Image 1 (spheres, helix red, strand yellow):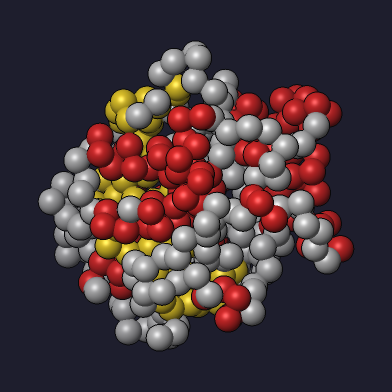
Image 2 (cartoon, helix red, strand yellow):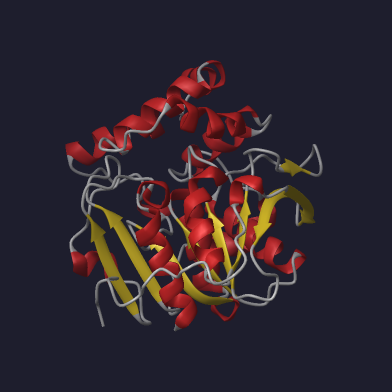
Length: 320
């Protein structure tokens, strides 16, 4: 059944202790191949919601969302993905991969390290991909999924070389740029300017401040940022090999597995990189309960541009 997230899920009054994210201490925990930096806010015994950022963003994406969700009595886990912020690889020998299988494995390892048997997983862009991977391959660990457009965010790498319409190719210029040595050097030298340009192009109606961008841009100074980002955009087109330790996961993802967990898809109508799809296409690989909402005037960074709508979606899955 397809419905719209709407007024039936009301945001709560502050009937629980308030846990403002901006004051939450960043913690560290060893999880898989990473020492993950993350925020853990809200009541420890509340339903868990894991909030996952995308490229080129960080955990500040969820400042307002987390305040709203924790006010309803939920626990929020907000990690820096590999290559961002304070998250570090434990070993210098671990490949700095940005492939989708690695992102999914990182998320599962974090849930294991924090002893979280099941959670609502919510994300967009890279974070949405990690959430979709875990939802597809380990559905027993997922009580609900929020994934922003394209919704089904698992890459079909086998067909990635097939050309699409020119408008879509133009929107992917940044990915093609990062395929070569020039793009690697350009991101290394101009990481803030490059990422700020993407913010503007992908969210044309979002009037973010220099202070808002600067708070996130600190995360791009991670020593592995450029390696992880460029590997991600090369691997998804089959241009480089993945990390062998994730080969079994990638083989399963190559089959484009369906997602059966309860899902909410949020689509920004003004998204400058991922336009709103035809509904049948957007829902074709979801076999469980799914509902989709198109948000007018919202671009690619849905949780930071529309935190109330994102929080409503998360709370609706918690209550289900």
